[in-house]
Length: 93
Image (cartoon, rainbow, N blue to C red; front, side, top):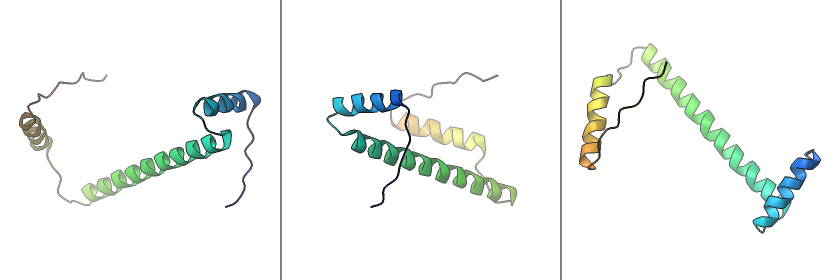
């Protein structure tokens, strides 16, 4: 395991110490956990973005896609099977 140095302002360092103590953790373990979670989140976002770009390229290359009315019908059918109803969303401006 390697060592890294991170510079924190005093206010953030105090906040970390306070929260870590309240969670019965050391500040070090709290920061390692926070960084681990943040990296996992960033990796997920990057993978999601790459998947979206790949699908966009496929569509532009002429691969078949699902029409909106087909997808809407499928979602409504799934909701009905679960005994739920589709809730309309507000249109964004």
